[in-house]
Image 1 (cartoon, rainbow, N blue to C red):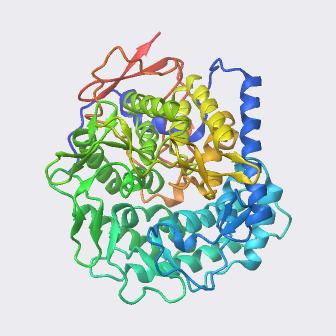
Image 2 (cartoon, helix red, strand yellow):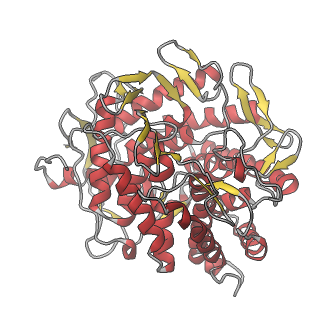
Image 3 (cartoon, rainbow, N blue to C red):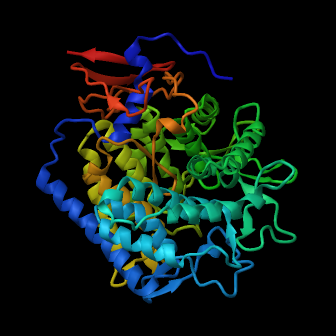
Length: 552
């Protein structure tokens, strides 16, 4: 049930949407004092990073899935994603050009339509999913299905820049083929999908019935858009049924667990947080609301967000807790948690986002990169999970916070990230993951998300021209999806974030520039425009609601 909302003046009622639009459009105007030459220099550094990774993949890895930069070879890793024990690996699988698919939207954002076009042609003529390979539904959904759908939409939007007659929805046809292969995974008594499915033969005999909250609660964006594009409602219906079932399993505290059984609908792991196994569940609730306009998604997100802030938050950190009692279970930072400040920025909780982001930055500075897991109660690295696989989440949140505030400090954080990546992880054959952040020993793996997310968010931090006069959300794999009126069952109501995070430390600055942060969704169409007001609005957070103070 949605908690009652106070009656506030119109500017306050628009705050969540206003901040969202500022992030999505990149249209908040003003001089941030960073300097054009410096910005251009950093943009070019990111371009060099992307093409160093991409060119090496195309030379040594393509058409296989991912690059091994130390040995300048490849790995057909699609069946290994999420497969910690490397079970049931295929014998005759030769890759699905995973990194190329993941790179397509980045190529458009970087302005390389020629290479984007080349990628479309190759995939159109060569990619097939009729392969005997057992894959993780969640990973395949966010990487391959999301990559294909996003690239299809971009190909339609940029059709005037492609060769005449080149594109005839080939990527959409591939996405539809993949989506059809997903559907048998949802044939369970609960509607919760199996975590694993064979692309050619469906669910394997004696397949595990264990899955994660993210695994069955983070499918709605890609499968929802696939239904919108094809007119086939089965994809969205399956994903939504799973999401509704998952939400019905929440505790009385509005908390969910981490792992569950898709046949019984019972929780296996009650301890939960905002990191691995759960993270994108929260992310997709708010983004589904933005993309599809249903209050059902908002109601779920609103309740879940308040529960997270009440039971998981400890100052700027987020520990794990038992979903049944709210009692803390594990006091640890995980690198995947670094997405949370970006999500908080989307919904207007910028003060809390800034505080957490600064703590992640402190850890980054201490180790040179962000370790996979850091034990807060002991002040030390996790004994085994010391790696850094080129993850994008910290760069992602840095991008969102800069878009919302235009504070040049976030551009300086971006410089630190770029410097670390080039100093510690760049090798002759690409960018290598860090096996141990205490020694900076490298691992022979360049993950596809380095190109789909890490480089993309760093590029957008210094050049957001792709976002100007357009409205997108980014999937959890960094693939842009446009916000369209035709995808909305109705237009999102403007919600006031009630009971958002209370910042007790009033001495801690809320890094908000004197920028215009107000916008609106038109009731007639969603060609969203910023409502240009001449007064400056500065966000202040209080215990019960977020109000705007007008500053002359």
